[in-house]
Length: 348
Ligand code: SAH
Image 1 (cartoon, rainbow, N blue to C red):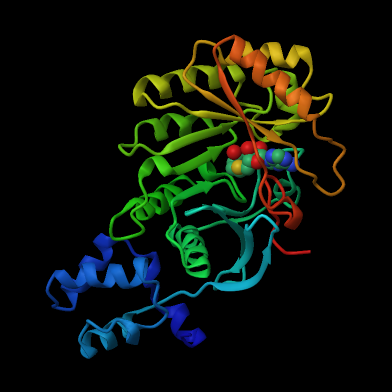
Image 2 (cartoon, rainbow, N blue to C red):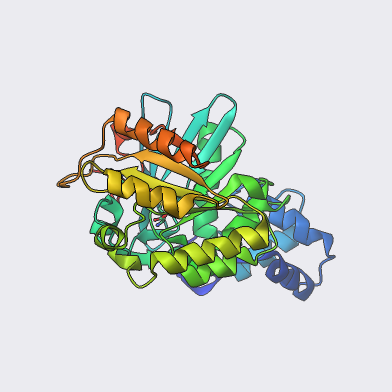
């Protein structure tokens, strides 16, 4: 660990982009191949001190240590689920903490990462929204959650979903920079299709996302195709009407040729009625999409209850009858409050 006064004065090397590191390398009169070496120590090997960068000359390590520091992530807590998932509470330098989850499945390991500490979107069925937004995370803070899970499992990460705390599209630039670093062969080298962003539906950012060159995967939390129901469940996106969402998603599919996912947590008597199902079918039919039906997870103090498994099957069947593919998503880590909508800023 660096002494506190040094960390406050110098830049966190983990926050710097490849271009910025290259600039620093040039400034120090070093050959350009040093950039790749430094990036690999920081992004890939996740070292915690400059002395571990053993292929750099000692003088360069000293020069780096004078100009930068390596921000540390502390694991404040970890809980293990019966299904193999692990939920972590990680704490950043300023004391802010977020949760992230590692979900193993055979030889695959998916990480669910947070993009903000807390969330400002106030969805009525979600625990994260209840406490409000603390702050957005930097690209390196998002990236580091993934590295932390990799190192704890000691396994290659095969996919990342930005589905932890926070609204990724309310922190667009940092989220994109983190995705690029995850995708970068000098970072974790995870294929763009295996990197998923989930948004509650911030339309200008969906449009922006559709113009990014990488083939990242998009998921949109729909939860109802009836305007008044969605407004009540998701007050944070009230100003973006379903009609506009429908158009934006059409453009997204046209421009990228990629199939977005709609997330739909089935809530008994709220969004699982026949009328709701009809609207959902109309919203999705003849569009390029996939519907992920999520079982509603318990949130302390919530008045909402999950629909029955039979009802979920009805949804799959009716959607299939209009040509829309839907799956029921198995929930991971529910016994440790690590499932969708259960993440908070501290373990209780
Ligand atoms: N803010 C982004 C990223 C969060 S992803 C978004 O809204 O998409 C987390 C997913 O879990 C979202 O689809 C969210 O709506 C859903 N969710 C929230 N609370 C839930 C709960 N209690 N049960 C099931 N899913 C929930």
